[in-house]
Image (cartoon, rainbow, N blue to C red; front, side):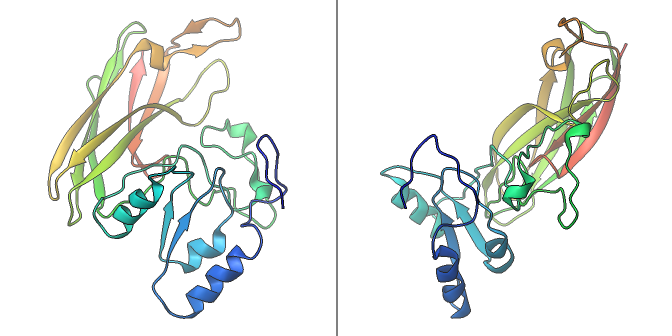
Length: 241
């Protein structure tokens, strides 16, 4: 089969007999890690349910083999996060984290939830989020607000976490997504350590385009969500007067 750039595919399944090969290896009882080399999200439901570890390597280039080996042998603790959403099947497309409420699909025999959400990613350690706070619960339209959160490395290894901040303009004159990424920070945390992470939301981050195509901050309630991906989030709120 010939593969070319700027060409669509009719399925997101693995090509050829690749899935059959993975299933045959898994049946032997040998511990298996699936390494994906791909340029688009794949429908890998069986692998997700049956293989204990998946490493997304994308198209890593000439040093990719060394990088993959260092991750597999524990010489490097990975901290990559998905910049896209992985669907369960091609029928879920288009699927993305910042859909407007009216654009969310409902299916007869399938959940609207993706296989992996935007921002998803694991490492050899774990993290806990706590104590999210705004610097003020009420601000003016021309003011900024700082959001702080405590992130704790609850695992047994030092590692990096990508802290992601999303907002929701709860009531607005135009329809807005239920959540929009407005900031992220990649931080190194030693095992057992807690670090306070602070984001600043300026009027630029809080503004929207209204029906007259004016960029402005509208008064009302704002919801702020912080976490390690676009789904597992803790929340706080503030008001713009």
